[in-house]
Amino acid sequence: MGEKVSAREMDWERLNGQGIGDRSVDEEEGLLPQSVKLSSLFLPCSSLQVITWGQLPENITVVTEFLLLGFSNLQEMQLLLFVIFLFLYLIILIGNITIVTVIILEHSLHTPMYFFLGSLSVSETCYTFVILPKMLINLLSFLRTISFTSCAVQMSFFLGFAANNCLLLVVMGYDRYAAICHPLRYPILMNWRTCRVLVSICMVTGFLISTVVTVLVFSLPFCNSNKINHYFCDISPVIHLACVVTYVNELFIFICSVFVLMVPFIFICISYGFIVSTILKIPSAEGKRKAFSTCVSHLTVVVVHYGCASFVYLRPSSRMISVKDQLVTVTYTIITPLLNPMVYSLRNRAVQVAIQKVISWREFPHKII
Image: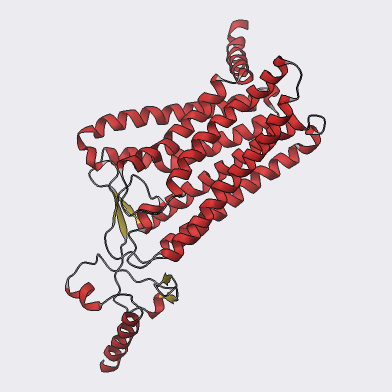
């Protein structure tokens, strides 16, 4: 027994020498939650050295579940928020499902542009499904906990579909560039095989990035507070609960954010630079108007999506999540998925006509009978 105690003391002395913490503070004050035995996770230290959990003492304690505070500071408005968000969620579901259904049933919409739009609608639907049902339940619940594993899964899928949406918007921008700048080569540049490959690459790349980011966040030890000041497991509110220095992890996460947000946005800007240059060379005003009209819907979604996401993920990290931050997050988790079907259905004449044809087609058999 004496040898074990001595070995444990040596572990603590080695860790204290590297700035991990003091056993007396953790054990004697009883500030740590329920303990759980973990292995093979990695812990970045202030010296940027990686130390495995195997080097930690056996009685290390960590957080096993989180508490989502959400909109708990607006207790008197919980029911109203539930009604509003439920209404918006139903509109998102109905709008995106309608677009996907119409694109599948209407043969005139079997083009690359609407194939990408349908893929975006499916991704947006899954994107909101990861967050909103849990948020709606928490608005009516006193127990707003989420397990460690469920939090990691939610973050992984949320980031995966979010990154997929960013990359799909780039592909849609390239599609508009090919259609307007190279109309004669368009059928070759955007054949169906190319379209399917591009959508697959967007999905695989998005979830590879989300996996990397999720591992960088949840490989950290959480042994202090378990209260997430947000309505879902987002990066910043979760990583700041870690009980060690997180600079290295945050740096890699920032690099991933730049790759997902800034690089695609630059490509979109370059594409529209060529598009505008080509449209200005069109002699007729009607031709210019028609060409611009095919890009307005896409540009609207791009500005809202990239603008809000960049505000959250491309700025200095803060340990305090303000009400403004939550409102911006609501914009890109609820308003943007809501904006997508509304913009493409209200401003797109082809989609409007297709919806009317599908409705008429459903009523036609009844008229015959």
